[in-house]
Length: 119
Image (cartoon, rainbow, N blue to C red; front, side, top):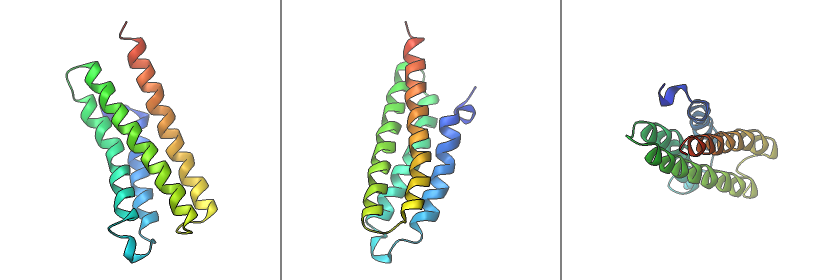
């Protein structure tokens, strides 16, 4: 089994594509601001899942999953800011945050699973 078999990784890769498409419509003066931050946060999620899965220990994998979870929460915050600034509609916000929340739940579930099998 590899990181590519994990639902958290698969859905977070889809999320990256959606974030790139969504932020492509942001004001051009945001390219080095919110647009860049959101793209980096979204990319960080599947990247940390992949890197952690390649590590030699379960403890290290869990640490990378926590980093991915932090990026997921960062992205969630940035989406709220985007909505508040009217860069995205309420419908777009609701749709994409559902996926962001799903990724968070999957990450938390994977962390709990790995911790429970560590005893």
